[in-house]
Image (cartoon, rainbow, N blue to C red):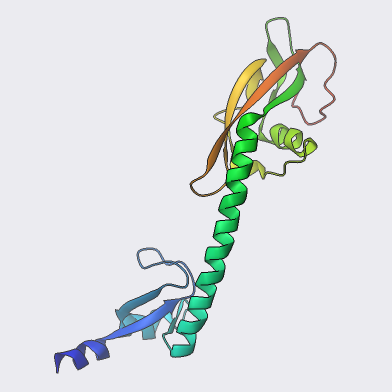
Length: 168
């Protein structure tokens, strides 16, 4: 008899969005019936579990898993490639080796683009822009758990830089 009372007070739902302290999108959760009926369902944050939704959810999970595996493989390949290469960037500098501007994420992305590697500038992590010639290391976040360390060699020149985006 107590099992029926629990069933009337609880509802199984499928989350349609990530909800803090509850779960991630497409997860099946059990919540109080009132929370589901009065908040989650009217706000279109969840739907009640029905047999066809469970099948749809399983198909979506299979597709997401396959996509995640492909993305992880590509990220691992790119990580190996980035860690082997040293990116050279030429910029104007004084006699002491200080640049007349700075080299930031944007310049690194453009240099990589010239080599045929497309990376979003938000994935490159630099503590601060590079302001001196020499070797520098930056981290590149490729996936959630995959990160590459890339060497950047800044070469100083006396002539104006061909890179138009350097800040002077």
